[in-house]
Length: 63
Image (cartoon, rainbow, N blue to C red):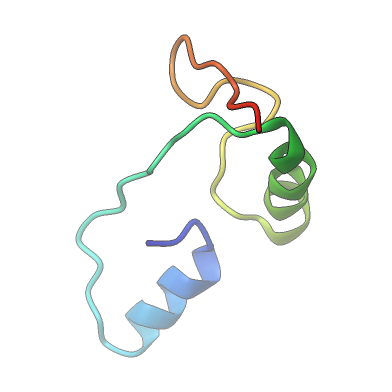
């Protein structure tokens, strides 16, 4: 389980066939937004925009 495209590429390079990629989308907490944005923008991780709900009608989790 990963949203890192380089991990997917490494599996394929080592002969592991990836047949499906299923996103596990949960609403981000307020403290997570900056981290998720950095992963998406700087590391090209396959993430939705963290400032928008990941699932319809999602409510951010407060801690």
